[in-house]
Image (cartoon, rainbow, N blue to C red; front, side, top):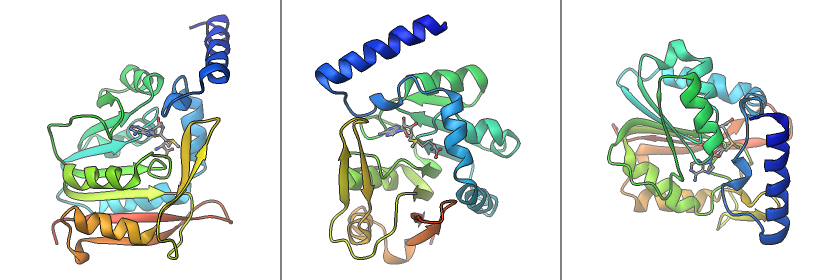
Length: 223
Ligand SMILES: C[S@@+](CC[C@H](N)C(=O)[O-])C[C@H]1O[C@@H](n2cnc3c(N)ncnc32)[C@H](O)[C@@H]1O
């Protein structure tokens, strides 16, 4: 699409937002690979940690990434990901279109929480998504259901062991939540989803930002 086409699209979107508001997921429609590369470059500590984790898993064949954006992981680290059967899911049509045009991995467009997935995956991972979703517990339960062995879920928006409930703040303009997870809720949801206490951990996770610690949820069903 040319510059004019993009400008018209952005203008139409801004009118629609002002007139009707936008619905969940729309804020990521039209996002390009530059946006996702920029995001990726702000989380280098988390990415290195995840890549070491991935390297340590010898019994993983199939991988699902939720919120893969423009496919920064499978494209940038192709040599690592081509050892696996990788599938990326994202709600953003433009991001998935970019992935399909730039990579031969498997990509699906849709809302993970609403999609019907027939398969299970040895490892499910998701970075920077859980703190935006509209139903955190449902998001987690579905990950447990669809994971065969492992899951690695990272929220970069904070860590608090004091909250009874998730602290969910609705960002009107972007139509997403910015939430801080309640460890109690995460724990209860994972147990309700059928996991035993020793099959998961919830820990603070260092981020690139000095002022922020993330929350890392690791699941290991093989224990
Ligand atoms: C903040 S970006 C993070 C992108 C990338 N994972 C990273 O860490 O740089 C969140 C991504 O998750 C996607 N997303 C959010 N909610 C989703 C959902 N329910 N199902 C599928 N994708 C979703 C968005 O479209 C967006 O690409």
